[in-house]
Image 1 (cartoon, helix red, strand yellow):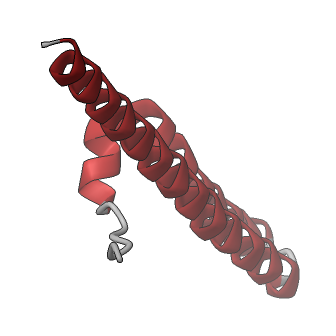
Image 2 (cartoon, helix red, strand yellow):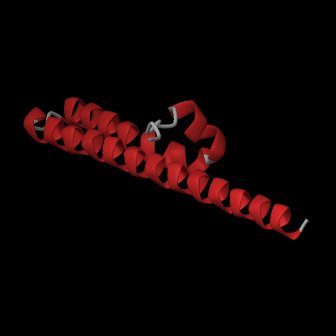
Image 3 (cartoon, rainbow, N blue to C red):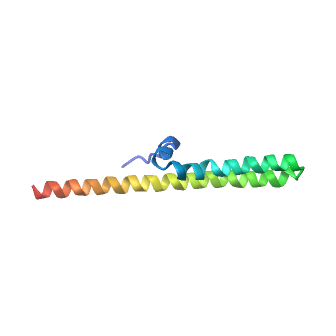
Amino acid sequence: MSVRSSPSLVELFRAAPAKSFLLAVGPLALALGQLANSLVNGLSPLIAVGFAGVMIAFAVVATRHHAAEYRLRRLESSLESDSRAGTAEASD
C-alpha cells in the first residue's frame, strides 16, 4: 500500500511557478489590498474581513487542487514510464 505524499509548496512553485503564484499569492494580495482599502477609506471592516476570509479560503482550496493535479501528473508519468519499461523488457 502506497503512502500518499503531498508535494511541498516549493515543489509546486518549481513545477509551475506562474500558476502557483496566481493561486497561492494572488488571492492573499487581494485580501490584504481590500483590508488596506477598507482602512484608508473608512469602510466597514466587517465586509473587508469577510472578503479576506473568503479569499484566504479560496487560496487554500485552489492550492490544494493544484497540488492534486501535480500529484496526478506525476503518477501518470511514472505509470507511463513503467509501462514503457515493461514493453521494452518484453520485446527483448
